[in-house]
Image (cartoon, rainbow over all chains, first blue to last red; front, side, top):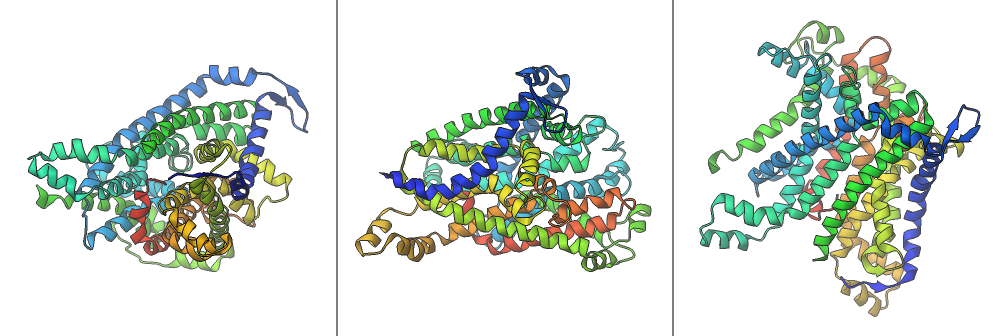
Length: 287
Length: 266
């Protein structure tokens, strides 16, 4: 759309600008403020320069949490994307099945995140949960509260349960926007099912899939409540992701300086990855 | 091959429903039955857990609180986002692209980063433990989202609509409320749905900003694990009840969801 130049449009943006600035800029400045200072309470601050940043960047605890975070995000993207696309391809295109699928599949997205954690905790408990009980009676030695592998398996499975539907809904919407003429042309050319997917469906879904990756990256990178309720970060520290570590440091130990420095580094990483994605996406939109 | 295509979504939906069924199953059991026996359905069927929740004000007020701030937030987000989205979709102005990206960065900000500063900030303006504090804090991610979705819908409305209305002698205000808003009603509905959804499921900020008066139900649930042992039945019943508002909302927008996702703006 050709837009007209109109500086008065700023008036329309002011409410949004004020509300978001109120929420984002003031607290963010507090974080920046803390990240350069040391405090012993009662509002006495001393300048510390970049000490906290150096401390965080060299701390093994941060490296470990960051490593776990990237591994987790990588695993769930690897599972959820192909699975989501696969399910979207097999979903009915018309009839009563469409609303049924849409409603039931959206259900996990609308459950408060700590209820998701609590639900999976009950579901996976080794003695009384369906998942735990079934796995144990099948001969697996399963206990997510004590074994690291099991804790990761459960956390990943929970996230797949919780968020695959988002990828499904996005892909489904992308698939539905393809004109029937494309499929007819493919049929005339005698294209195989794989060719149709590779050369028609996948390119047409590129935009929604970029968005799916962006959203899943962002949200899984800031995951807090679900694993916190499910495993509490345990056993040991094996499922402590970045947000859990940060909240522990800020609200648990009240190490304001290091926590603030960590917040900024954390935010910067998310921002950097999202900026790259955003530009890729917008480049397509301009075309 | 095509004959068995329906199997994939069916198995997936079964997988989605299993943990939900287990939660509902547990909510109708007594705590002692949950701990002592393993059964696929309640042997001693009881609604006592639900009775407890509906008769104890510390429990049911949690639902009232959650719904209150969620509705506040949805109203604030959508009404602030409407004019802004219109500006982004129709006009070029100084710094528009940067502003748009800056808005989006707030959707990307991990809430954990903001938990402590929000706590201090809202305490210092005397809004701690109020519904409006949570509603305002959720604007952090819901306003960018609302602007983003609405901008998508508005951009798909041809600009000729605006111009024709002005030629016909409509003032801006009359055009906006009488013509433009009804035109994008579906988009507003979807936006409200997503704002409601993200405000409803968020807990970290809601929990950090409240103590007793405005405490959300999801935060009240966490107390079952700390005091009085581990009341699994009660926890399950409270969890089951949190699913209902979402299910109701989704039923109303079922026909628009796919369209909303098709905009590629969530």
